Every structure is written in structure tokens, then in C-alpha cells.
Length: 275
Image (cartoon, rainbow, N blue to C red; front, side):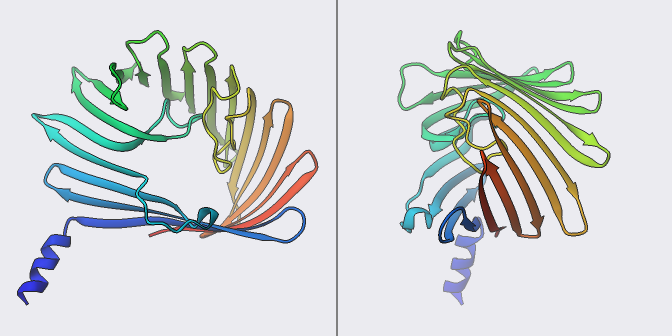
């Protein structure tokens, strides 16, 4: 009884969650099946949290339980402190993919302005991030002390959600997304200008506008609506003059998709659930 009680206390602040996705698809020839399992382990004690992630289990037949990120989050004299290997990215997720690196970060709020400082990979310099509200818009400036800063602005204008990202770096990017509701349908349109191929780092085909890291000019229209069969989504994505049309149906944890690029069609069915 004593041993059981001690085990219960030790595990009280530890949680495990995950996301599983399995996809069967067919383009030409035989159908293929791919699966992916991501796990997150969180341990808490007071103001201190340790988070570890184990990602891409089952991808390329890799089943090694190897942590891809491990980070410590706590408070030091009222200042938030984060250290370890963890993911970060520029912007609000419109065009850039999170990437992991060894980092040490401090953040606090002064007079309504969020101030963060991050050192990556033992660099001799640190990056400063400023966040705040300006005229009702959420503004974030990353690498603020550098001329190649990254600026993100989000807000609402006349009932439309507006998201703007701009990199001041040479060969940077400008991305604008506008989203709203038209006739009961959710509609969004994005215009993305990656000044050089690779300026936009998003490489996941599952991202809203697909992989962007090899493109320069991207325009994307996404329309979705609820039907008796489930949520139906249509996408038209133009990447450097090449169109991709996607029609998808989401029914519970299962989605069915038809994707066509330059006459080349791929059919797929995907089951995805969180636990």
C-alpha cells in the first residue's frame, strides 16, 4: 500500500499526449500506406515544467524512441526562463516551419510590452523579440535589434482576419492572408512573395498552402463549409504559375482528399486522432 501511494504521487504531475496519423494514398501503380506518431511528455513541479517530444515514429520505418526536443520552463525572480532543445520560428506560422535548436531564452512584460531575449546554439549574440498591441493589432518584432528583423501583424479589419508577415532581410519575404465568412462558408486568401527560393521555410505538404520552401510566388484560395456528409474544403494553390487543386472531405477522424497538379491526380484517405 505504501509503495502504491508513492508511485501515485510521483506520477501525479506527469502527462503523456500524442497525435497519430495514418494515410493510404494512390497516384500511379499500387497504393501506399504511411503512418506517423508524435508523443509529448510533460512533467510539472510548481512553476517548473520539463517537456520532451518524440516525433515521426513510423516515418521511413523508424521506430526509435528518441526525443527530438527537451526543454525546461520555469520562473527566475519573476522572469520566464526557457532552456534546452526546442522549436521556434519567425512569424505566426503562415510561411515558416518550426525548427529545433539548443536555446536559452528569457522573457517578461514591461508596461504592456512583451520582451524576450534568446540565445541560439551558444551564439555570441542574442535575438530580441518585442510583442504588444498597437491600435488593436497584435504586433511581433523578432530579431528587433537587427536591421534584418522579422515583423508580424495580426488583427481584424471590417470583420476580416488579417495576417501580415514581412522579413526585412535581403532576399526576405512578404506574406498577407485575409480570412472571413461569406454566405456561411469560411474563405481565406493568401498572397506570398518569397523573394528567393527558401526564404519561406515551410516544407510540410500538410501545411495550409503546402510546401513553400522551393517557391517564390504563391497565391492560395481556401474555401470550406459544413455539409450533411462532413466538412468540405476546396483549395486552389498557385506556386510560380503551377496550379494545384484540392478537394477534401472531413468526416470525424477520417479525411478523404483528391489533389491534382498539372493533370497528375493523387487520391488519399487519412485517419488522424489525438490522445
